[in-house]
Amino acid sequence: MSAAMKLAVSGSTTRLAVYKCLVAAELAGVKLTAAPAAQAGLTLRLTQPALVSGSLQLFGEHAICRFLGSSSKKERLEDSLAGFDWIEFTDKLPSDAKAAAAAVEDRLAKKADPAAKYLGDTAQLGFADVCVGCTLALARASGVELGPVSAKWLASLEAAHGAFASCLIKSDAIVNEFGFSFLAARHTQKASFNKILAEATAVALAKVAPGVNVSPAVGIAASGKKGGKGPSADLQVNNAMSLYKELKDESIKSPRDVAVKLQAALEEQDLFSGEAKMFEKTEIAGPGFINCFLAESFVAERIRRILEDGELKPPQTRACKVGIDFSSPNAAKEMHVGHLRSTIIGEVIARMLEFCGNKVDRINHIGDWGTQFGMLLTYMRHNHPDYLNNPPSIKDLDAFYREAKKAFDGSDEFKEEARLEVVKLQAGDEQAVAGWKQFLGISEKMLFAVYERLNVSFPDGLCGESFYNSRIPAVVEELTQRGFIKDEDGAKCIFTDVFEVPLFAVKRDGGYGYDSTDLTALKYRTSELKHERIIYVVDLGQENHFRACFEVAQRAGWTDNTDLDYVGFGVV
Image 1 (tube, rainbow, N blue to C red):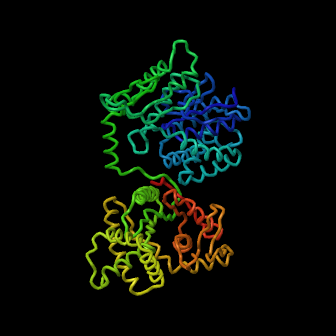
Image 2 (tube, rainbow, N blue to C red):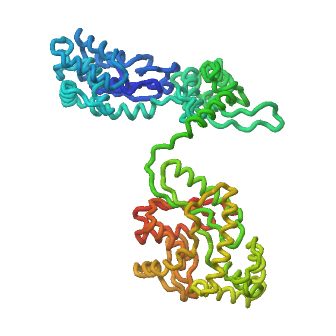
Image 3 (spheres, rainbow, N blue to C red):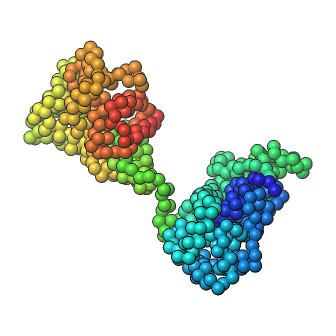
């Protein structure tokens, strides 16, 4: 007997059956490799485990365990009449673990029963011990409290044979990995169309090319030619070309011949026939592509179940607190396509992470503190001197911004006034701050009108650059104390390994810019908001800037408990 054998399992195979086979194999000193039924070379749909080794095929855990026991290199699993009586008894146990354990306890407690006495010697092992031991151990693992006689006997068995404990864990892993059948669960949301067809293709491949190790190649069907009649295919099986090279069959002259055989093996399955069929038809295209057309009734039934039962359950992942910085347009200006792309990509990521159970903070870091407001304040002071008390009709702030930008670009004097207005704003000048708040309120209404149309939400509102202005000096001081900052021509710079251009903690004129604001935002989000993960959704033109900020944050120890991610997209 070969020391390496395949244990074939399917979605219908129970964990108890797998557990018994694993224990028997370990006690016998035989290595078992678990695999889905199709990959083990079996074309039929299994309802029980199968042992495959060359031309040998055994079905059912009892046949497998007896075969392993009789061929054992270590221990022979032999049974007397009493042992066979126990095996028959376990076959008739209810599927409910609690009821099964109670029945075993009841029989073990009957000391006059010859079969009960048979299990008393755990040193002399038989197949009955495997059946009863696995039943009790699995029941206990599922939370069932065993009776005193059963618990004592199982403890003695496990102390003498470690296979019962080690194989219990293995059985769970095998059933989780290979036991789920997409074919059997094809009407549930858990089974994607691709994976259902892939499993059906694996069955077809095992029939057409037994013993050939090839994985199903399934994907979305390519679009049909322009002007083609009828509906387009939905999915496509692309194994014919690669399989043609592996087959040594004189009757097969081309990949298309392989496709014909695969098509026939596919259409034998109930996915392609009957009232509950998934596919309406298949067609062979080109050199051997098998196009599959979904049945409208199947798709309608899947949609109905989603509507009635709810959406697909999220994967089991560790939930955490995530901050996503996205959208982030400039106030007082219309969004451009880059902002729209960041908005949509960021919203998708936020919804996916929320679906998976994470606590997501949507952060809209708008540009509400800078040159554009200096321009607007100067323009309004020139053209509407009493705008604070008697404001003009400003329904479209962008129109005022365009006029202010035209004046800014056309006059050095206006440009200098605008720069000084920004300095006054940052210094807290009462009139400048009042004008800034007026413009910001109008701008927020414009932005949220766009977000409403896009169905994008920011439950915590906007958190722009101005929010961090009062926090920047402390961060600059911290980085100075750490020795990160160097004076360069009157500016305070931070050099990184990311890019030769430094980050400017303080500009030459003594003001703060994007660099100091983004560093401060990072410190705030990691230290005060306690984000365990922060994702920046920004165009690729700003990648070096954010990578440099990430490096500084990591060197400063701000991200010891936080992962930083950059999601870039192309610049238009």
